[in-house]
Image (cartoon, rainbow, N blue to C red; front, side, top):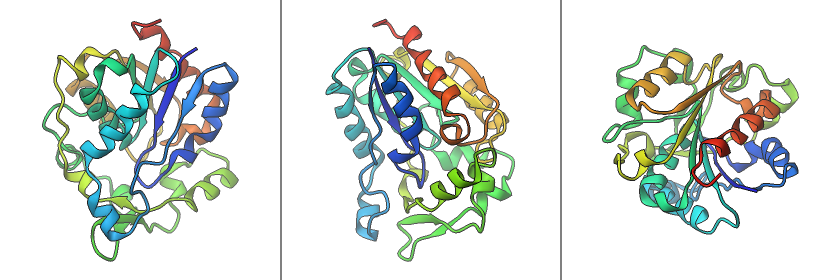
Length: 246
């Protein structure tokens, strides 16, 4: 038995992992998929969010895990959260999984990474600032065509209706990781070949920037938890094999 802690990406919540969590629990594992504090909050709540605050929140979940090994997984923006949590509490984490996620080297922010990327017009027009500017909210007319074009329309529509405001500061905050802490934890990168948010070329650039990950490829969009939950669950289970506690 293992503990899986699943960290959602921008604008989402822990609910996005419901199908995957059910499959992992069916195999006898403990699963936690929390909503990160401040998501969808007021301007003051959005402004109060920090990367280290989220890392501390996730690190506590890992320390309190009821079973080992502990597999910490992050989707999309959740990648920077699990990296910082791993740097904070490496002793509490046995494997890291990046699900088409931001896996960045020390000192790099999401904004800096994207500055070195080809323009992604679909992504750039996906969201707009909140009224006070402390967050962003998805305003694209059909975000499912960017996030989850391969998912069943009923599932993707229901998911898009649940998107909430995302703290803006996280986009600008660089990760702070070291080879001795974050770098010592085995990593699995689950790349998604038909991702319109973080294209495959960008995912592979991150793998080159942070070498040493095991890699699995899914023929999936940016939301494999909706479009292929069974394949994603099976991929997550493979992280147990790379953990030293296996």
